Length: 505
Image (cartoon, rainbow, N blue to C red; front, side, top):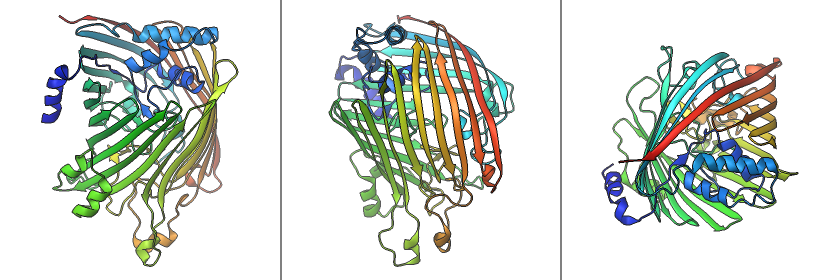
């Protein structure tokens, strides 16, 4: 923390650039941005990395050749620029306030409609209900330093099985983003709360995603627009299953490379530490260290992960991700027979017709990939996975994004999801149980076929509509052999947005 404060105070002399706030992953503009990137209209300023900085987004929006795009795309680009350029490039210190008021209704209380499958368990949907929400986001720009806070209320939270906060009040609230970021030409120091996704943008990251609510963390990035060293460090759940105090920490290191405009790679590792009296050892915090080597050389016990993400941009953009947790090479002793632990994604996206975009991906997470022999060394934050919230499943998804008119984005979707009975919150199996433990698809496999239509409509600067309507045909529902049901899953939300800004005295 002292190092963070020192760098914030010294950021001014380091460079004269203006810091930029981040565009939250759930910002109303992001579905349009991701659609324009998938269709090839918009260059991705930071592949394999979300969220985007406002300044980077404005830069690539200005670079769009609107003479060759449809009228709907051109107008959408214009609206996005209008939303993000009010304070961009302004000299000196300034502020921005963005507010919203909304109403919504849904047949499920979770954020993810695919989590609304089982009547019980980690994919429990929560009750159908109507909701009211609203909030104010304050952004303060002081040259190379930006500070953001975004408290809001949402009555949906009290019904969401994943929400860890107060549920015995009429109105539930949280702070979605709250951070201070010091930025200069060759680096950034960040502390606070901000949803991130490391990996292809169309799918959740394998070890870092927006899945957990409010993951406060320290972040560091060093490098250029082509090569960066990146790291985050955070504290995870601080209790064991009995409620006893046990410290848990996680650090992730990443080497992000963009050797050419078409290619992007990210090599990364993660370490999860735990112990009743354990401190966050500095050799795991050191961005220049390899956690795997430190584990071997120091003899300290951690749950280690290594991974690779890639993207190759073209007429059809290819992307993928791979994470390895535990692979047994020798098969001599009983302990060597532990099923391998891995996760992967392979997919593609591209343009079709005028302004339309398609996406197809397959993802798989094995049964034991997040679990460890030390049951406390699991990447959970308030009982939610820091990457995926589920294991022991695979999924294939096809979407087609359509922009028939300015502000109207419609996305048909087909998904097949297969879910075994594994769960990262379950205890790790004993050595004696290894022969009967599946690498993937433990127990009865639940299958969900989802056909859906979702989208966003933004007719002007202040009003926004989001909708999702789908049919889930579930076989072996709740992992009961032969039990089948078909369920409608839907949501509708209407939001009024407003804002203002100006120079600080």
